[in-house]
Image (tube, rainbow, N blue to C red; front, side):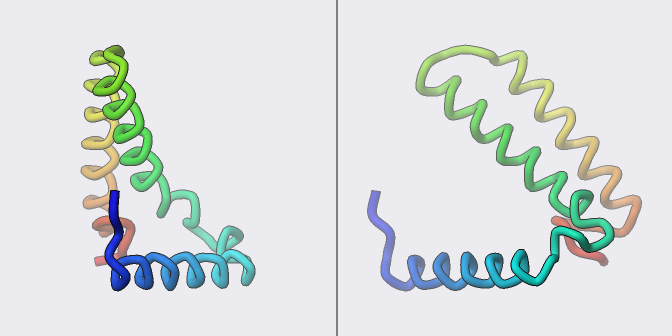
Length: 87
């Protein structure tokens, strides 16, 4: 896999920004965990899909995670959040 220099610089900047926010205590802010709930659900689903693709496996788990992610997105939109941002 090859990453273009521009994309690498974007990723490095994003990592530096995250590190600065975490050093400033962003993880203690109100709604921090709620904001990351969908992010974590998407990552878990991607991990399970990749594992199933590489090794075969838990297709039922993928279905369950997809349903959970859909419910999270519905709940977020009702609360005024889209992709972790207030709308």
